[in-house]
Image (cartoon, rainbow over all chains, first blue to last red):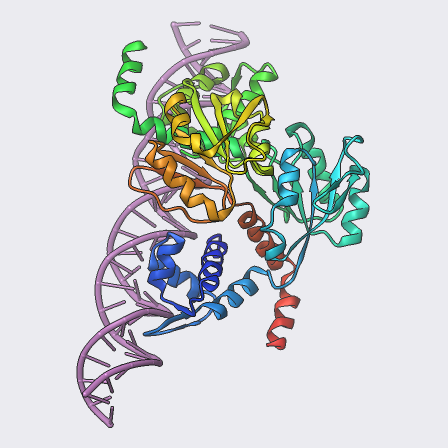
Length: 211
Length: 211
DNA sequence: CCGACTTTGTGCGCGTGTTCACAAAGGAAT
DNA sequence: ATTCCTTTGTGAACACGCGCACAAAGTCGG
C-alpha cells in the first residue's frame, strides 16, 4: 500500500511529541485520510490495535517499518549530479529511513572527483562495478531526459530491479523491474489546471467568445 | 485529469521529431497507457481526432495546453533556496510550460541577495509583497519540514490558492486551496516495499522464524 | 462512386478501492 | 462483577476507473 509511508511519517511525528497511543480517528486526521480506510489498511498487517484504546505508536511504527522493509537498509545509487542530484544527496530523509546512498555517478568529467554530502562523485563508467560492490538494489536517475533511458538500461543490466526516475521521460523496462516517476513539472501543471478551474467561469466565457 | 501532462509531453516529443499526426495506439504506447483510456481522456476535451487517420499533433498540443491552462502564464514563487530550491529554480521544464518563476524567497540572510538562475534571492519578509506584485497564484515550498506550515499559511493569507509542497509534512489549508505534495522519501519507501516483495519468500520466512 | 480498411468514440461489464455503519472487544468505573 | 463507554475490525453497499469490443465515421485506392 502506497499510504503506509504517510502513516509512518505521521506516527514518527507523534512519537517525537511523546504520544504513546493514538486512535485511528486521530491518526487518520493527521495523515489526511478517512479513518475507516486507515483501519482497513492497518488490519491488513495484522491486529495491532486495542479496542477502546487505539494503537501503540512505537509498536505500530515498528510493524509498518517491517512491512515496508525499512528494518533492513537499502543501498541507493544516484546518477546525475546536477542540481537535483545534489539536492537528493543532501536530503536527510533518506538515511533516517534505512536508505544509504552508496554512490554518486556522473558523466561530466569536470564534476567527477568532487565531494557532495561526504561522497566522492564517481564516473558513470563505474556504474556496474558500484552496483555489484555495494549491492545496490535501487537506482535513482537524475540525469537530463536524453540520458535517462540509457542509464536505466545499464542499471537493469547490472541487476537493479527498482528505479526512481526524475527525468521527464517514460522509461521502458523489462518485466519484473519497478519504475516510479517523479515529474516536477507535471505536478505544477495539475495545480495550474485546478487553478484555472477555480478562477473559472468568466475566463472560460472569454475564451469561448474569443474562439 | 492527471494524465494530460503526460500526453502533452509525449506529443511535444513527437512534434519535435516532425510527426504530424498520431493514432491513439501510437500515442498511448509512447505515454505508457492503454489506448482506449487515452481515447476516452481525449474525448472529454471534445472530438479532436479524425477516424481512420488519428490526431493532429499540433492541434492536440494546443487543445491540451488550453485545457490545462498553459496558454496563459503562471507566476510561481519558490520559498526555500536550499539544494532543492536551487534545483527547482534551474529546472528548465517550468518556463517551457508557461510557468514563470517570479521570486525566490529565503529566511537565511546569508543566502539572501545571491543570484540563482538569474534571480536575486529575496528575504522571506517580502513574501506578501512579492505575491501581490507579480500576481503569484502558485507557491512552492522547498523549506525544512518545520517551516513549511508557517510558510503555507503566509501564502494562503497572501491569496495564493495552489501550493506545491516538497517538505515532508501534511499541510492543513482552508477550503478552496489546493495542495500537492511531492515526497522523495515516500517514493523510495514504495520501491523498497516492492523490492522486498520481490526478494520475498525466503526473507519473510526467516523473519517469521526470527519472531 | 464504391468498397475495403483504418481509427475514433463509447456502451458495457468487471474488478478494485472507498466509505458507511455496526457488532465485537477491551477498559474503566462503580 | 456488571455496566457503560470507547474504539477497533469488518461486512456490505457504493462509486469509480479501466479495458474490451464494437459500431459509426472517415480515408484511400480503384
